[in-house]
Image (cartoon, rainbow, N blue to C red; front, side, top):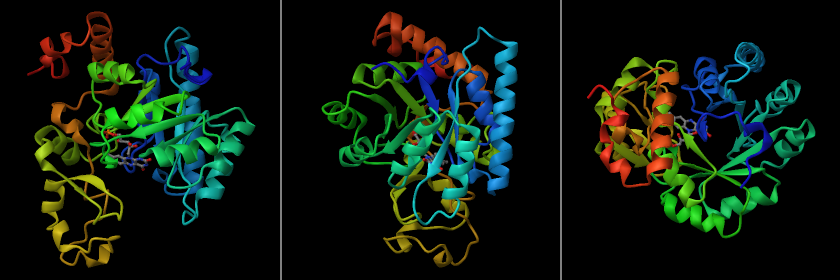
Length: 330
Ligand SMILES: Cc1cc2nc3c(=O)[nH]c(=O)nc-3n(C[C@H](O)[C@H](O)[C@H](O)COP(=O)(O)O)c2cc1C
């Protein structure tokens, strides 16, 4: 599928840096965009609407200056993730700010995106909806979304249990628009595989937590390097929606999810701890299987781009011969 115009000739690899609560702050977003990856952040990472306004101005100014200085470089547009749920009091004021700043790319999650689609299309922006099932995808298409972000099994944050192989092919039976695939994607070989499956772009979260520019605590970044998939726990007992969490971060605060009620968690029930979800109890996806370092974003994207080029030229078997590409120092 042709990409929306805002992404054409603006990307160094076909990837979106996914929005991550408490992780994607302006330094990560601008570093991703400057490296040719769409940088995005959840609007609620800014503590107030005033701060959201300031962040948008800051990102725009920094990217405009980069485009002036490097007119021939691929500098990606930035995007914002809006939580559409009616319980979100920031939704209306922050949508006004998205319109004021004419944010080029908007991702919606947790609610009906219709109002956002209408508002963002009004100034020529693009709206993609985050989905985890075909049913959810059909609703987003009906609301006029420009693209679907399919978050498959093994993703960081809230994830489905449906394999990417199954999810993408199911959605391609009824959607020929732009399709983004997320869940455990860290390197250029996986990006090429996603394209073979029918995706136009990939959505990468966990890999970018372990970068110098991410806002994650140092201990969180190190945990991604030290842990493997056996350290993940997939549970709905913390947020009420199934998500992958790093078990060592739960252990640190004495949180045993099997002792918690199975439905929506009441954090006050975590008696012996003041641990806060996302801030202290950390989420990550199965991408941790191949995270061995925390480089700066430009180095990471250069590495992924190199892998992607090899994968495009050489075909899939070459990926097997290049296991050390993802961790140059090992
Ligand atoms: C720590 C963390 C925080 C996240 N916060 C958000 C969020 O605020 N909004 C959102 O739409 N998705 C959020 N996600 C999900 C990501 O946007 C994306 O779907 C996921 O990271 C892709 O899978 P991957 O982590 O395996 O690459 C979060 C994921 C992680 C790991």
